[in-house]
Amino acid sequence: MVTIEQILWGLFLSLFAGLSTTLGAITVFIINPNDSKIISLSMGFSAGVMLGVSIFELLPEAINNLEIFTAGLFFLLGMIVVGLLDFFIPHEYMHEHSCSDTDTVPISNLNNPRLLRTGLLVAIGIAIHNLPEGFVTITGSLYSIELGLILAIAIALHNIPEGLSAAIPIYAASGNKKKAFGISFLSGLAEPVGAIIGLIVLLGLGMINEEVVVISLAVVAGIMTFISLDELLPIAHETCNDNGNDTHTVTAGILAGMAVMLATLIIL
Image 1 (spheres, rainbow, N blue to C red):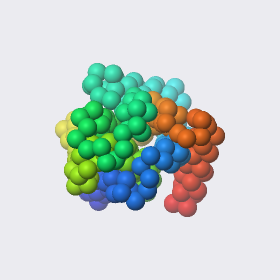
Image 2: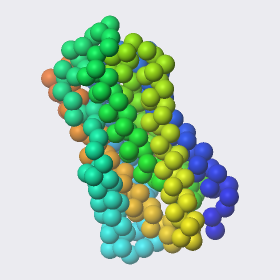
Image 3: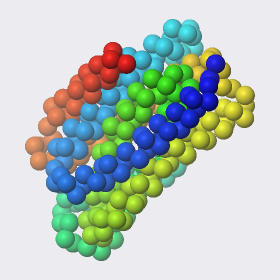
């Protein structure tokens, strides 16, 4: 039976995960924003975390409560849904820009419209993908607060470098720290909005019960897998890095992310 406590925790955790983008915006003023190796490593780590929680927790839980064929279908449905969202809503990602979009323009080069556009488009892309991530967090919390916490941590870990990637070009173009921070903050708010929309739909259809929540776990695993394969790993591999596109950095991040998530599941 789903409780009010689970719902409130789900909403809080989605807010926490969404606003982690602001941590990325803060770090842009602390670390070297042109150190692409950090971005590649963090994106690989985030992909490892999200794939790890899907493989070690979400899919096994769904398979244990459903037939493997049914769980597999809903897993594919999750990938298809977020794929359609990705296809039909126009936006751009960090990895869709060449090195010249960011690296060739120094921080001191203000009022650069192309650089500012890049940052805004990245922020829009982050906001779009934060909507289904909000559904991910609220669904996990409806199953158990512990699972909701794990999912929120996994999402927060990849939202931090996303916030950094949005803030870098905005700050570089405007020289305005508050503007870069504010836009990153707003993109993160899409996550609790997604959680609220998902909750309203489930409540409106009278579908908050254990069976539907278990089915949603398989859908969520599909969503997180798609985001990892379509967004995080391409960004990690295509980020301009100073080491001749050394893929070992990305691989190390993936392995570290999966190991950390496995350890987290064991501890919790």
